[in-house]
Image (cartoon, rainbow, N blue to C red; front, side, top):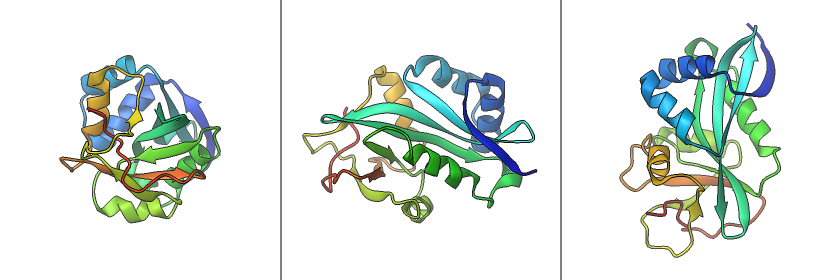
Length: 172
């Protein structure tokens, strides 16, 4: 199958199926996020009409800047290595926002995201006055950080604006 198109989607069944297949989460856990995260969009890549790669963009802000938090980046196993997640990330970079940021789930993903211009500048130790904020319920904000292997997640920013090293993404 060849990649056909990138589009925003709200097809719950396809989203739940791909998410569950890649991350192993139950449909109840996924549905909880889909229902309760109010300011999100799912960007998907389709091949032969099937959703084969996706990521979520959750609205956030830092100081007076408007951004998107990239969450749940995934691709069906048989489609990996074809640049599908990268195509979604590149598309997200073209959207009208001041910055994109994400928290890689593990150390191995920092090099991957740096290939797309993301820089490690986000340290979530809670010792900085400025932080990225979500207009979401506290339980959803916690949900967004649960996929990381770190007690104090560190993350990456893509922006044409110069972010200071050491700003924090975690406001608790």
